Image (cartoon, rainbow over all chains, first blue to last red; front, side, top):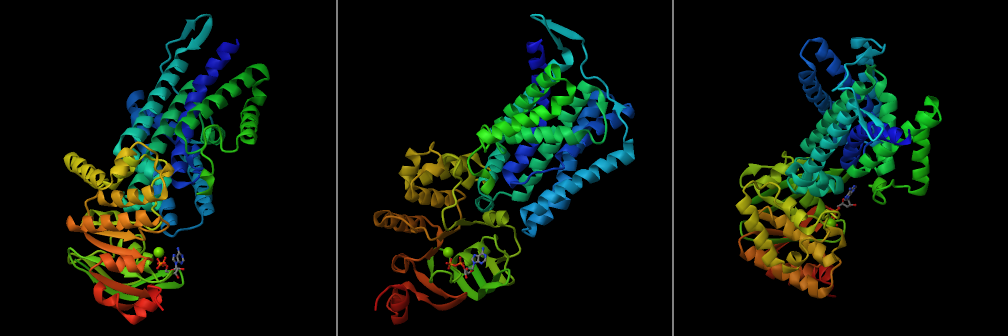
Length: 291
Length: 235
Ligand SMILES: Nc1ncnc2c1ncn2[C@@H]1O[C@H](COP(=O)(O)OP(=O)(O)O)[C@@H](O)[C@H]1O
Ligand SMILES: [Mg+2]
């Protein structure tokens, strides 16, 4: 039973990690909490649904959604955040802007798709797998494998490619990044693309797991992923992954042993405990918030 | 090579540069001296494109650059080693240098650039895998200069390279500045240490509250009574 629940939590946690990475990436380079990210995630799930209903087939629908959601991320930066940076506005202005964008996206989804819950196709449903008396659904295995693969690719991009080096440079010293000849706006907009694309993948995986989508689905998932990012140490990529796993596991243990009512509260209790003990998060760098 | 005419830069309401004219010729070392707050750093940041001038022109090799973003200015051949070093503290020495060569596409050229800066700064070669934030002040200054050199600039701008360093390191940095210049790089040098700056440079401009007050051959200017009194600490 407990092993079973831990596994459920790990699968869910991996996809929280995918959302959390989006918060962490943007925070890492802009010191901005992008509160529109949860809605971007919901947008990604709805795009899959839309393309599926156009009879494009599930796989092409997923790829189109990833692309379109990545473009949405770029659009958010280009139209709303870049002008604020140019004017050197106070940080809180960016934060409020992203909250506003979050509602704009949510309302747009309601207008286009209706606010009710809609069925979402199951992903890779090949029944249950029995490993040492633990029942694992093939959807969960798929969810984990895809998430791990994507997180590995993202880690590779950040640590081993030229654009990744530029992102790391930007996260440490914006002025010096300019002086290196880095096109800073391009790197930022690329980061928003990555964030949007990974949110679409997470949206697809989690919707495929619960087989349901709705416009406000990004609210709680976004908050949990955000707390996962903070828990692991915001701005630190592997922190977001570990944070996601902790939130996922505590949530599914709470649901199993305390009842479904407590599942959301427990992940935030864990967050608060971690922050009291380690204010910068598990892997956070000291003073990163001061920059 | 570089021509600046009637350059004005503001920070909000603060009028930091009030109509500066200066020129740098190919092959020269030109120093810009002046007391704290005179506008020296502002001048270099405006040339580098990090600050936008409110009036005036900056041309580099005949091309207007004052409307260009910083990354385009680097590509044209102007690099700045900023005041306070501004290294990437969490990245290794060699990653910092790789970033210096960010605009270069040719792998062979990047390799040559590495060899050149490691020859100029053997200390950096020894510490290439060390995280830059843990280097000493002098080493970080070397890294900042080396990083600016990695782009193989035609014009290298150095903002207070001797700030806060021990006298023997300062002497070494000034020797390096001369040998970089002899290898063909034009240099614009900002210094509080006016004496050293005038000794290594061909020409000097004196900046006073946002305006050029004096200019001339460094050898002449170093004998100027006013300069001696105000900047060289001679009574
Ligand atoms: N970021 C800034 N915001 C407002 N004023 C500034 C800023 N940076 C410099 N200044 C002002 O501009 C003037 C020139 O500064 P600066 O170019 O840094 O001088 P220097 O390098 O010669 O010491 C000073 O009066 C300084 O107070
Ligand atoms: Mg200065």
